[in-house]
Length: 574
Image 1 (cartoon, one colour):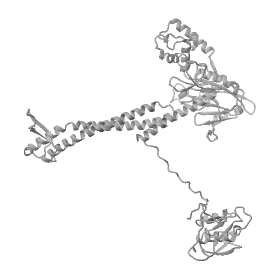
Image 2 (cartoon, rainbow, N blue to C red; image 1 turned 90 degrees about the horizontal axis):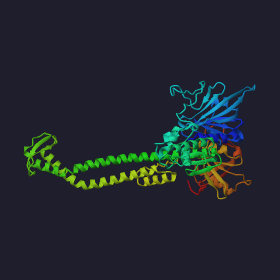
Image 3 (cartoon, rainbow, N blue to C red; image 1 turned 30 degrees about the horizontal axis):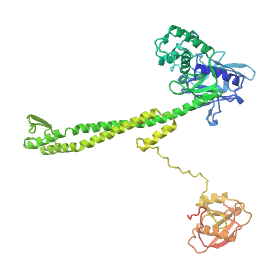
Image 4 (cartoon, one colour; image 1 turned 180 degrees about the vertical axis):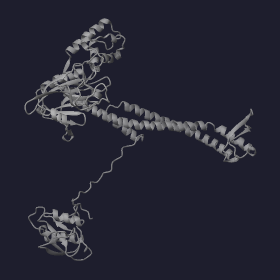
């Protein structure tokens, strides 16, 4: 996002009645480049020095967890009042004047300088009296920029002026020899305060968009149009989102006529906020496009290497007759071939015109083995020639297909289009589908209990501890009126019969079912009849220093039951 000088001029006019004489209640940094000023019921003023989305606007509050304090902003801006906002003519620079009084009433006036120059964007706080820098979002040291150092204590210097003519002194002779499609860029490069959109609008107003040749009188009239345009710009009452020359979203404050308006807004701040959001989405989309394009180009490189190897094999296959001829010549002169030689020259018996043939040999093989190898290569080359041709055709088809997908990627404009292409590529196995992350079961926290859960035929809940440590936690976390059950004189699980707020006491049948569970989850599971003690949890005590699972009980009663398991709450047995 590149806010033009005319847009910033209009933005200052829009913000002035909203932020003038407002107290800065709080100030904090979000990320590394976004400074937020809390102005009470006026909202939050964002001063962004982001390298690709530098901006100034009223916006929503950031997330609390993202806020970071910066000392110089707290010292000089927190509690200060805004007393003015000014736009530097024909520049992408805005000054916000603030005044802060100390405890004895002494006022200190400072200037917040918002240099919204994208990759060089910065927010700098300067003392108006001394012109010294008090703080900056981006410090620039002398070794980084020998022309302009930005750091606390240094004198502030504005950015170097560009070699452009102010619009009131515009000399347009440079337009005479420039073709129609390059005139807008030429205006931007030569006239201060113009951006591509405003330059195109001026050409549209003057009727120069399709006019091939411009005369001296045309240029004189055009200079008057430019002066009138800057003296009284045709501002839109609100904000616009349009497409600039690179087909990107752009904020516009002018009531333009030369291009289609994408969206209208009540204020410029709303337009800036929406365009910034669109750019974030576009950057994310572009990043995903680049990742897919990288995978496709890697696949394209592999495909080209594969085609190179196939062409080499095809060239080799074209020598089938030569290999066969060499093999036959070797067979005919096999007795004349000495061992351990790497080449031999023999008469070519199969050449009607006569002559000799130089044949390379493998010195580690015999003459007959060399001859057999050449004949084998000849047969293999003849069989492989049609197969290699089909492989080359298939590889060429794959290459063309990959190139078509790369061309389609470059034309993608929405997340939906990218999703369609990605699914097609995954189905064609040109890229890998993202791996599904296995579901990670949450780890049990220390102190959590996960007892076995049962329900009696009357609907009473029964909980059974799984081990000694869980037995202690289960009993300790139970209600005082719940019933505690444990096999008499035998190791086993703690069993809790939950009252769940019932006023009535459990029936004999319910007690026996819970006691059967206590017997089942004990060392006495194999007995026919087991004695089980039960009492209210209020009468269960754990002696000091006792090992896990050991408790003492009072006021207990006993019931005789047979060990058996009930159905669990989910209807299953363990």
